[in-house]
Each structure stands twice: as C-alpha cells, then as structure tokens.
Length: 141
Ligand SMILES: Cc1cc2nc3c(=O)[nH]c(=O)nc-3n(C[C@H](O)[C@H](O)[C@H](O)COP(=O)(O)OP(=O)(O)OC[C@H]3O[C@@H](n4cnc5c(N)ncnc54)[C@H](O)[C@@H]3O)c2cc1C
Image (tube, rainbow, N blue to C red):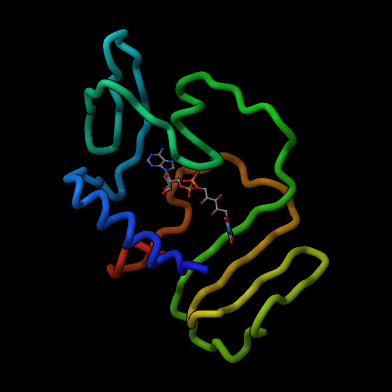
C-alpha cells in the first residue's frame, strides 16, 4: 500500500524531471476545438495546445465540455479521503466503523480519514469541493 502523499510526491518529482509545468488550483472551464489544436479556458486564462487529455476524474469537465457521454449505471455511493488535523482523534474508532448510512475508517496513518456514504452520487461539483485551510503540502486537503 502506497500512501497518497508518497504517490503524489513520486509523480510530482517525475513531471518536474520532465520539466512539465503543473498549475495547481487552476480549473479548466471551457474548451474549443480549433481543428489544428484546442483552446482551453481556465481560471488562469486561455491556453492554446495541440491536444487536451481529460484525466480529471469521475465528474470530468473535459468529458462534459467535449460532449462525450458517460454510459453506465448510476453511482450508488460517494467516497471521500482526507488527511487532516483532528482535535479529538481518540473519539474515532480505529479501523472501519459501519452504520446503515455508510462507513468511515480512521488510520492507519495519523489524520487519515476515509468515508463511504451510501446516499448515491454527489451532484456535479467544482473539482475542489474540499479545499485545504491554510498552506501545507498539496496532498493535505
Ligand atoms: C475514499 C476513497 C478510497 C479509495 N481507495 C482506493 C484504493 O484503495 N485503491 C484504488 O485503487 N483506488 C481507490 N480509490 C479510487 C481512486 O482514488 C480513483 O479510482 C482514482 O483516484 C481515479 O484517478 P483519476 O486520475 O482518474 O481521477 P482523480 O484522482 O479524481 O483525479 C482527477 C484530478 O483532476 C482534477 N480536476 C477535476 N476537475 C478539474 C477541472 N475542471 N480542471 C482542472 N482539474 C480538475 C481534480 O482536482 C483531481 O486532481 C478510492 C477512492 C476514494 C474516494
């Protein structure tokens, strides 16, 4: 099992070696196929590029903006994962805790919380629903 922060650091180091710029906190909001490339509208301005690859998750804005359908079955649950500072971690069960509405797991690292909620899918949301408060490393959110 690879903790998310280590995986993100490995990937960040790799793209840094390849000199690929990563724009954190910038959202893709529009796209236009110009025939010989793509104009990508973002919250930091417009970017012209040869190709646009949509790897923006289950609620992919790129897929929606490109008019690509997402056939399949409706989602039945929503999951969240966070690494957070918790005021009273001793009040949480260690390991999975289940109820009729969902489950959470605290651990194995301090501050790591996973939830699984049995109330279907979230409506489409801006990609950064859960934002970190203050600074800190990018995985801490
Ligand atoms: C609680 C939980 C536990 C999980 N546990 C496991 C596990 O143990 N093993 C396993 O294999 N899988 C697990 N998964 C599933 C796994 O996390 C996903 O399958 C995987 O992260 C999908 O990767 P992805 O790159 O397609 O999308 P994501 O990881 O969702 O990445 C999409 C990225 O695109 C960004 N983005 C979205 N919209 C925009 C936009 N408009 N503009 C710019 N950026 C945007 C998002 O901020 C995000 O960084 C778990 C998921 C959850 C929620």
